Amino acid sequence: MTRVLVAGESWMSVSTHYKGFDEFTTTTYHTGFEPLRDVLVADGIEVDHLPAHDVPKLFPGTFEELAAYDVVVLSDIGANSILLHPDTWLHSRKSANRLDLLASWVEQGGGLAMAGGYLSFQGIEAKAAFRGTPVERVLPARISPYDDRVEAPQGLPGVVVDPAHPIVDGLPSDWPDLLGYNRFEVPEDARLLATVGADPLLAVRQAGAGRTLAWASDIAPHWCPEEFVTWDGYRTLFTRAVRWLAKEI
Image (cartoon, one colour):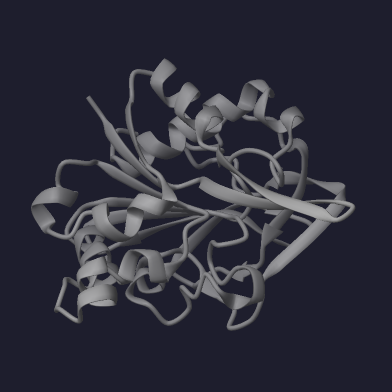
């Protein structure tokens, strides 16, 4: 059975409530991976989720741990969370460079996808910080040094530009609107499959013995609204993406 690790796609929010003289705070926890998980599981794919707050400690730190998966999906999780294990950050002890490890795992046959978000690619205020990392080396994306978000509250449709590729074969040429994405450039040895506005939306690449994919928008709200998530093509698109990364198609 194909096994996928989705890292990220969770967050905590803290709100301060002011009521006259008094104030108090509340904390809430949210996840956004369920639409992707549900379509993959329905297609017979096993999905493990590593929430953002667990990534620094629990993201795979050896080839053996990565080898338990066919595909790793990074979604809305910045480079620092993968790079800085608590042993190093809190106790000044050496630990594996997991960005380098991940790229090497791909080059030896693994499948890696990065999905867009405020902490994907370069991200909000450039805080995702994947530019210049070993992960960028293997992705089908040349990442901006700056805040790379494109907000599109008016909605912009995805448009297929390479209908022959097995991930998008048979899908409509125009997709439901998206509400934003990360802007990146596609390297010469990558293949652009779909665009949004004037920019890449979906690109793929052979990286050594492995395969990589860049999806510029979210996998779920807010940039990927309910109209996209409930579109019949959503399941087809992402299950094929995972199976292509796993070399099954």
